[in-house]
Image (tube, rainbow, N blue to C red; front, side, top):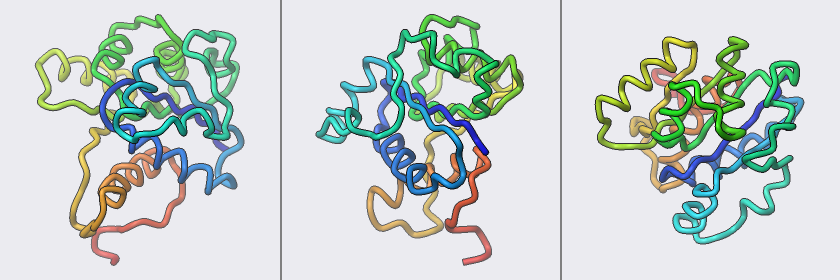
Length: 186
């Protein structure tokens, strides 16, 4: 059973985090433990983009960004998957540089050093060469860069349906069994 930590940073794209959390809560039979950590900017962006403070009432274990006693701050905590959604380029840069200055970057460092799943849902456009090199470094270290780039072949009709094309891809990458649009099968 999976132990999953979700990190939410201050990049635009709070809807991705919201929908991922909602979907994972409905699939509680596929994970043993679920935890979350927000950066300070993540809360502000969530309020701006979604117009609410529902992040305060998520209903899963929430850790403060400087709580290094969180179980996923150490490999011995045995969390096997980390999803950073959305993932700012600043966070990607700190991870690529090995800078563990908060719980998010420390947990990402743990995932890489333990050879566990780190999925960074990058949300930026356009990319600078620095962004590309940092994403390359994380990829070479074993992380997965999954840009928040929606697909349209499922013919989504709402903003949520568009966002789910990214969320479902992330869940696939995390090894979660989901029912979703599959190319050539629907």
